[in-house]
Length: 143
Image 1: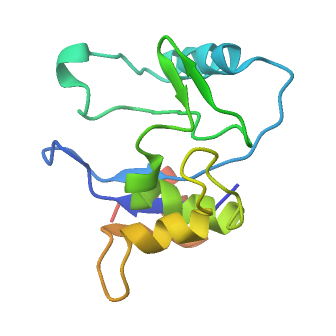
Image 2: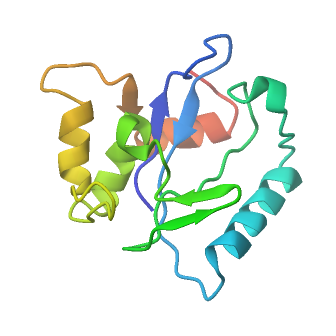
């Protein structure tokens, strides 16, 4: 698991910041089956998908960002995630986990994709949290 990052919400600023990370799993399930399981976990944690408020606040948002070198385009599922290369909140933790992973469509490593999104000296709007900060948030201390 990569470190946890905090980011400002995209598209709808009237909500609290998000906490983001990336994990790597191995599974015998097909990608659509993994997605179904992720959506089940979201529902167990109170996630209600509302098509009218796609970018609104949510209790949990689990996505399949990549699946090694695989490219998957199915109804409701595109892997690699179609906007991962635009989002520092995905690229920062993913680069810490797998900096040399190469996007199978764009043919760029995570580190290269990150450098295109976060220019030297630019504020990406994403902050790495230390373990004490994450533990404090889990306990309800907030910022």
